[in-house]
Length: 153
Image (cartoon, rainbow, N blue to C red; front, side, top):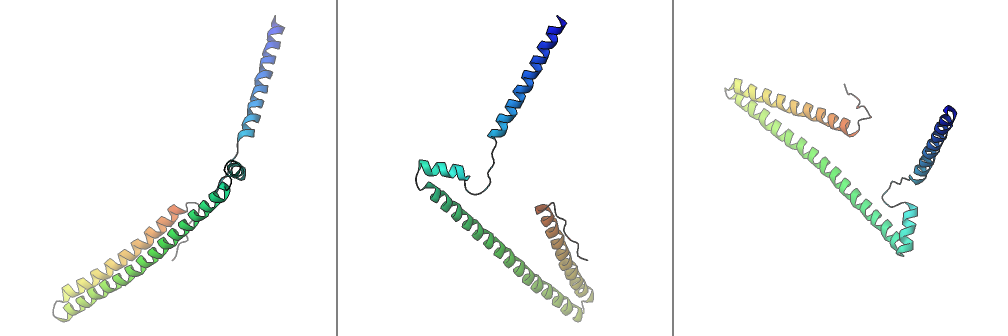
């Protein structure tokens, strides 16, 4: 009686192991992965068989989408450059206006107000510049977390 139980357990274990191996083989045969703007070549071939000319249409659609995305990215970069240039120009104009205004006040007998205006302007512009650099570095670090941003000294 003890021997037959052992044989039954061994048979059950072997069947379980065989089932697990079969399932693992079946799953491995079913897994496939494709990445890209178009379907995999096999799927594209199937589309072409079902609807002749569809493969060309799908590829043309992916090309148009890619061109559209590249135009948007170029526009965004150009807009960022333009904003940075205008920001620098307006910052310079505002800073020079405030400093010249401070000099005017200082020469007209309002030394304390003139110097305060000049000093305040210089501190404010420096603060904006430093904050902008730090936030740009922080944003860059968030966009590429695996890479470290080099420190400039």
